[in-house]
Image (cartoon, rainbow, N blue to C red; front, side):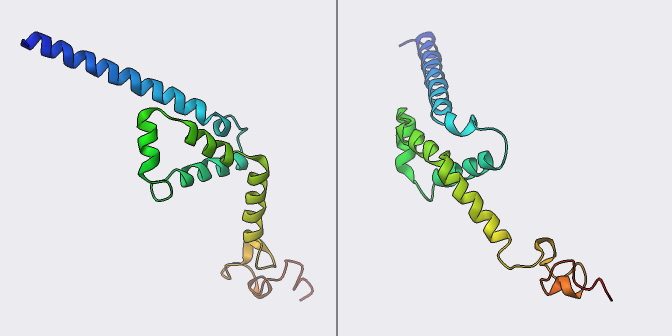
Length: 131
C-alpha cells in the first residue's frame, strides 16, 4: 500500500467514525427526549438528576458503555422514561419538601444563627411579639 492510499484509508475511517458518532448522538438525543422535553422547573431538574445518577458508572457500570458504543439505546430509553415518570417525580418532589420541613417550626430559621431565641427553638415568628 502506498502512502497516498494509507492516508486516504485513514481519512475514510475517520469520516466513518465521525458519522457513527453523530448517529449515536442523534439516537441518544431521541432516547432522552422524554426528559429534556419537560417544561422548565423543578420536575425537569429532578428528572435530569435522577437520570445522571442512574447512568453513572457506579450504578450501571461498563455494561451500559458497551451497549452505547454498539449504538443500542434501549437501556437509555428505559432509564430516561423511568426518570421522567410523572408519578415518580411527584413523589420525589414531596419527599424533598418533607425533608426540608422535617424539624418543624419556621423553615428559614432552623440554623439557630438567625432570628430571636424563639426562632432558635423552632417556634414561628408570632412568638415574642408582646414583649
